[in-house]
Amino acid sequence: MKRCVLLLSSVLLATGCLGQNRPSPTGPQAIEYTDSGKRGERPQLDKDRVEAFGFQLYWDSPIRDEILTSVTVEGDQLYAFTKSNRLYQLDMHSGMVNWVFDVGLPLSFEDTGHPIAEWKYEVRKGQKYKEYDEIFFVAKDHLFSLDKKNGSEIFQTRLSFAPATPPRASSTHVFVGSWDDRIYGIRKDAPTIPDWSWRTRTDVVVKPAYYSPTLFVSSTDSTMYTFDAATGRKRWPFKTGKPLRSAPLVYRALLYLPSDDFNMYVLDPNDGLVHHRACVGEAITSDPVGIGKTVYFGTKTGMNALTRIGPMAENKRKMDHKLAWTRKGATQVLAEGSEDIYLLEGNDQEGTSISRVKLKDGHFRDSLPLSGVDFWVTNPFSPRHSDRSQSLRGGMVILGFRNGWIFALKETATIPGA
Image 1: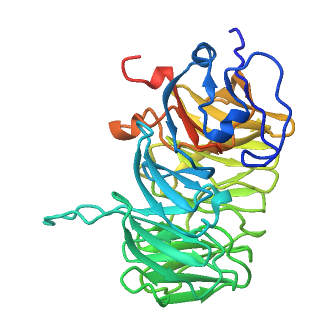
Image 2: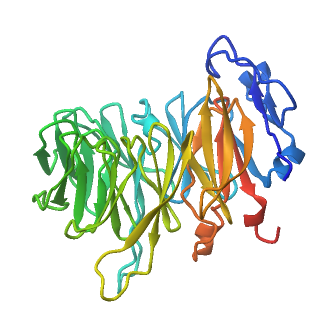
C-alpha cells in the first residue's frame, strides 16, 4: 500500500496566542494555517491527502473570537473551554454549538483529558418525566453543576478544601479528591458542606470511578479504597505494590485498576475478585480507555491493548483477558475504526503522527505525519456498537486548534452510505 503523508503545519506567533514558535515541516501540506490564524482563519485542508489516508472531513467548526485551552469528549458531547473562561458544548455529529456558559474562572484539570463529569439519569418504571442530565466541573476552588441539555446553572459552590482531582458523580452525590489526602462526597441537593469524607494515608490525585452503589478511590498510598457512595461507609480495600497515579475505569461491568507496580488489575467491582492481572514491565502512566472489547492504557514506552475473551462460561466466575499487543512510541488512543485503531505517536519537538494499526493484533498499517495540532481528543465510541447513535460517533478523529477551529475527520469506511 502506498504510504500516504499528511502534514499539518503552522507558523506560530511570537505573541504566544497559538503556542510557542516551532519550525514548519517541509514537504507537501494537507492542513496549513499561517499568522493569519491569529484572527481565527480556518486551517486549509487538502481533501485529497486526507481521503488517501482513508478519512473524510466530517465537519469543521469555528468558535469565533476565542482562544481554546482544551477540547474533550464527555458522555456523548464535545466540550471546548476558552481563555476567556467560557465553556462550549458542541454536537459531535455536526460541530454545532449547543450552548455556552460563562464560567468566569479558569477550568481546573484540563491536562487530565477528562475535567468534566457527566451524570445521565435513567428513566425508571412508572416515571412520567425524565430528570435532566447534569455535568460537573471544578474551576479554581469552585464546583459547578450545569444542566447538560441547555447549559443552565444548577448550583455553584466554593469548596472548603483544595481540590486535587476532577469530579465524579452519582445520582445523589459529587465526589472530589483533595490535597489533604481525603475524598469528599458532596450532596447535589445540599452542596455547601460535604456530606462525608475519608482520609487516606497520602494524596488522592486521580479521578475516582463509580459503579452503583460503590465509589472506587485510588490513592498514592498504593491502595484502592471502596465506599458506599451514598453514605461514605468503607467497604473492601485492594492493595497493590506501588502508588496508584492513573485513574481506575469501570467498563462493561468490570473494574480496571492501573498501578505503578507494572500491573493492570481487572477486578469484579462488587467484591474485588481478580479476573486478570496484566504485567507490562513498567509503570502505567495513562488512564485506561475502553472501546469495544478492548481497554487501552499507556506506559512511558507505548500503548497496550488488553482484550477480554468472552463471553464468560457459565461454570466460571472470571472473565478471561489477554494482552493482545503493545505499540511502542504511541502516546494516546484517538479513535477506533472499522478494522483499525488510530494512535497518536511522537511529540512536538520530534514530530507527531497518527498511526493506523490492526485492532486484532496491533499490526502496523500506515502512518500519517503531522504537526500544528494543539489538542488531541480521545474518542471512546466504537463504529461497531449496536446502538446506532453511538456507532455514528465512532471512527472520528477530532483535532483542536488554539485559534478556535475544531476539525472532525471520519474514517470513510464508517460513514453511512460511503
